[in-house]
Image (tube, rainbow, N blue to C red; front, side, top):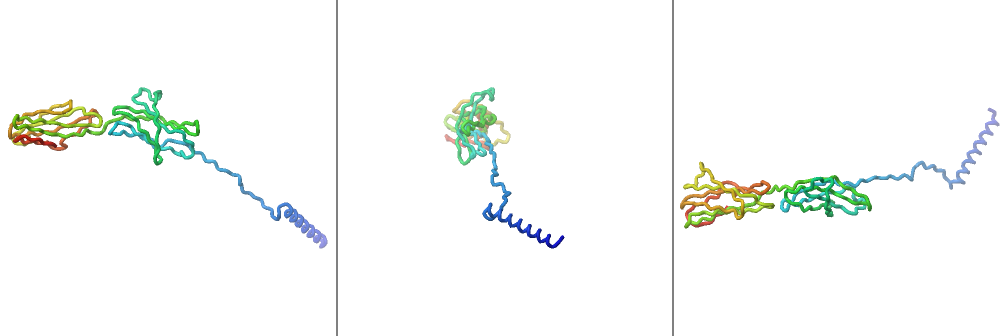
Length: 254
């Protein structure tokens, strides 16, 4: 290539780059920036409302059932009402009429107390109304209200030295109802029970008392088993016997 031709090409390139620079300056205030970042992207998160940790427990003092649970993601929803629906002793829990109880919230846990009684079968479910018209209803759960608490009882012997009679009294109570008291007793001359067979009597009506004749200077040993209507039993005294020595008028307890 001739020298003159090279000079012309160089001049042309200089003019071309000068034109490009002028155009860029005139149209972008002095800079040409291509932004490849996406500044309009938004992230959408989906939350699901759910009932968690649903449990039911029997209050042994009353027979009532306490239902507790929590709501997952409730802070993302407009909650209108939270209820526990229950039915007692129904044949078809899926088509039964349910009574609604408003659940109360404390420290993230909801609870409601169902007024059941011992022996009832309780069917229950949770219903949540949110976002005006939406509903969340759990599957039906059930619990049998069983009494697992034994009765309480005390035992006393009142001896009358004049008549020679000992009146045995068992005072018993239960969170539900006492069914019966089985009283065991034995009269001996020396208080040795090694080879003694105890007599027994079943008492079904309160006050639970029984009279035993005890000769002077003999011994009376007694204990009792108290049952409630659910079959729970307490023994009084818890071990051994309550022993009376019939030498004078007296009352002993145990």
